Length: 192
Image 1 (tube, rainbow, N blue to C red):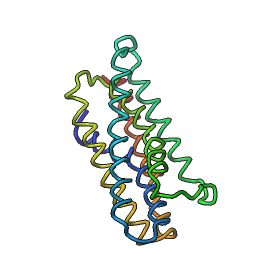
Image 2: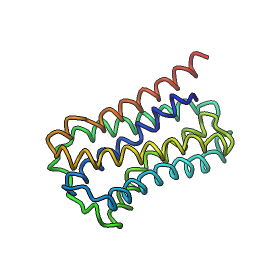
Image 3: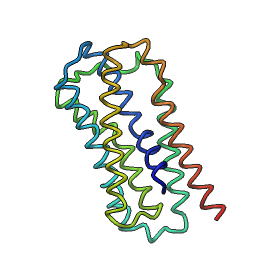
Image 4: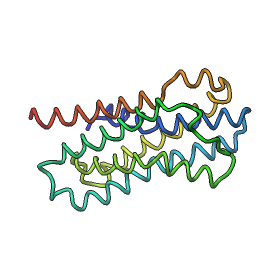
């Protein structure tokens, strides 16, 4: 896996954080650095930890399914990307308002937005990342990108309010990126 692909995966995963951060910024209404940094920190932390957990779990049994690992990686990334694409078309009325200054809410959102990253960690094991040093650079990029996009999303939500933020379609683009990476992995393994 190339560095460029890692960055694309990181951006794709961070789109959930970005979208939730925009909504949280809209609720905050003004810049409050403490809740902004706390939310961004936990989003980045969980986005980095979940792939590590998924990789550790899957790495123990990946040798049993080496012949179909590319199909599994394709399936996981396509499912996650497809789900993000579908979620991007939901109306704002269907989403509940939250309190982004509550640590309990922030932790719940961090876990909820990082479930996709757990599955990506599983796909890392199926793509052949076998040692801890191979996964550390990937999860570092994922954590940093998630942190940065969370801060940007919060500030964007505060500054632009709802009407402009919805025009970005962050979840839609993140989903498309994950599906395309899944297709690329499948095509590479089928051709070689």
